[in-house]
Length: 341
Ligand SMILES: O=C(O)CCC(=O)C(=O)O
Ligand SMILES: [Fe+2]
Image 1: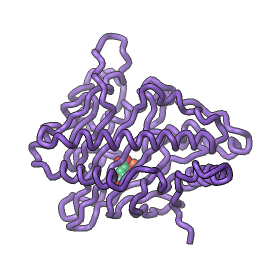
Image 2: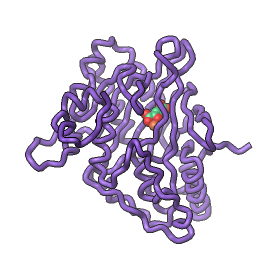
Image 3: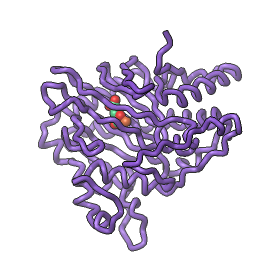
């Protein structure tokens, strides 16, 4: 039986012209059909994979008050710790705790006329009691960024575009976000929504999951499990790639179901986005592809904008109303974005 969510081996890109061609065809059909695949052959060492999961585990074992010292609500850049139940998906609480990390850059001094999304640039928050976390997560960030860029180039080729078609959206100031996430077991939570059904907002997501099940993708009007395969990353298409390909590629809805009682699940999603100052291009697809482009399936509750910074800021404000109220009340009062109560 073929898997609904296929496994693709990235090293085939380097195995001669014919292997490369079939890899690109497989990539295109996986991304178009289910929008999710497992990536093998990515070149990231097992020790690195084990290391980032161990670092995540140690962070979550810190005392609650230590984690709360770096609570996300301190950060206008939406970086830091969110306790279980503190994040909303479509207005409902997700039962997971997490630490959000972005690109380490200095904050931009505020002045009149600056775009609202310029406030998203700035430093991360790190736990004083666990100094090794920063190098572990920044090392992971660098490795998955390199894989994401290789994949993005492969996507460009698979859509019969120049290899550098997406360079303008990341070169110089790549923008991405990652998280370490812990889903507590059913005995400790208020429901079964680990994270509610959603699409990812960036270009591509590269997800590392531990050995526990829970991730599911919507396919053919049912939920299909994306159970862990050791050594692989799970890749899914984000809304920006759907938008750039006019819906030829699909940003698929997915969710995480709370683990059974006594089990906790860890994951490390990495969201490769576009520069905040970028505008998403509309690719000029060849006729045999453009006739099959469905147009992006924009969620009416969450409309998409080609202007990346506006898009990112609106979705962050919606997910984290406490940060919105503390740091963005001026924007909310001016009607910039609706925010959950
Ligand atoms: O934890 C996971 O497996 C997936 C998380 C996810 O979909 C997200 O954070 O966007
Ligand atoms: Fe997601």
